[in-house]
Image 1 (tube, rainbow, N blue to C red):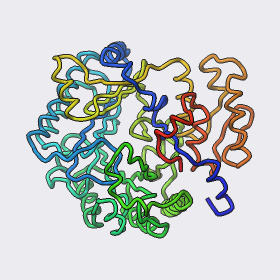
Image 2 (image 1 turned 60 degrees about the horizontal axis):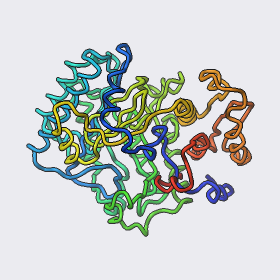
Image 3 (image 1 turned 180 degrees about the horizontal axis):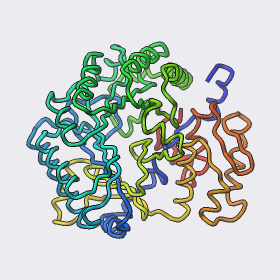
Image 4 (image 1 turned 90 degrees about the vertical axis):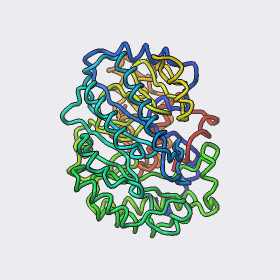
Length: 455
């Protein structure tokens, strides 16, 4: 955004969801519980594939900027015990959905999943391979921390079938790293990438963050250029979400050095320019990919999707979350497990077949309609509302209120509207969440304060 466009900041500030789901997690409540989860899982058609997400909420050190539900747990036996709970929760899920279900996407996230002992990781992965039919082209992915990856883990990951790893870099500047409590050298990053690729884990994702304390435009551009030289397959470029009311650790940073809205926009634009110049293709709100990556193909064919882990090539209609705080997305609704590992363990011990679900949301017909629209806006940067109406048998003029609310964005050059065809402009890419929010029937001025900065 250039100086001439700076007036947009006053009109499109505030906080908004990231729309990794609709309804968003802000709509979850304890009105949904374990019995709902059991019913929704049990009713999945036998021929429908699923994807799995396994959450490990442990790290070796805590980054001050992180908004995830994580804790430091150094005891190897306790980590192995948590892996045993994952194994047991999977057993209970298989009892509901049946063995041999086609699995199209498998992701381990956290936290840092590689904090689990290798033997524990092997047992869980062996159980998954025994109980699911993993598709030949399935993406099997894991998050790693370059500062704390055990030397034997890259070979283990290859042995267990992992074909993609995601690592955080965030920023290479020493002053920024000091402010954030994440000290990670260039050598640690490049050595980790080389070790993974050398072991046969060929596809690498790297995360960058802008809007951190002490960051400036020149610094984030240098980081982007250096990271691009490693030729990762995907990069995620996230705006730092300052939510100290949710994560008190964020208040430990020098928050007075946080960049303002215009500086954040400038930093985002600088990273964008570098990555495009290095040959990466922009994807949606915050991703960049190699033209050879499967996500580039999904973008070209209109088969890109978005879920709780962000942009994905996975087309399975059912996502099953396993572990503390993990979220499942099923046709009947969405559920979330107990957030802390201690609460998760207590619920798992409650009985031999209970699921550790503590909240969620039931999906109504209108939710499915709006979820489809928002996903198309966030993934394809366009949506044909006429086609959506036809698909869901809605009357003419059904989206007239939303089209009316888009009018100011049309005037600002953020979106083109032709009949019922809505197209996000390149200028509007940074405001994609604002455009998606037009179709969010739950969003109010009060609920917006529960989300992170929209820019």
